[in-house]
Length: 207
Image (cartoon, rainbow, N blue to C red):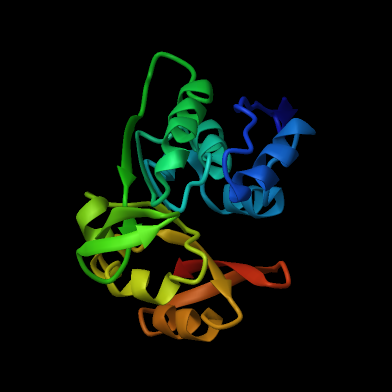
């Protein structure tokens, strides 16, 4: 389907509960959180988004937009659900065009404060800090981990403090204040908040 001047392609799937919403949007020619994605596009010029990192990919709704809008040189994708990986790979392939192919690193991991093992979707998966998964300078970082934001940030400090990327992070009512304080202590300013009732997407930029 065509949207916002780009042509997107996805596999439709109901392989798990969280994929249903994305596929329902794709089936009618829309992206989930399209308002947020448009806003990120207004802030980040394509030439500045050379390395995009995404934690909590699901089936790649946001990934497709990042590939189309920014055409990054490198994309680091992290998701804890093994069932999502084939769909992430398909989304990357379907939405990458042209002779220049980005480097795409896909990690199956639960991102937390320290290395270890975590239980996710009925499966034991590796747990790793973001600093172990994301290498090099990052220009845009998207985080969606359904309430695990505080633990994730504990293991992400070196990545964020060194690269100073533009950040979009989903927060819950329970984690929003702690996340805001964490970023404020590192001289980040809230640029815009998208309130969805049970959760918020907060866009932050380094001062």
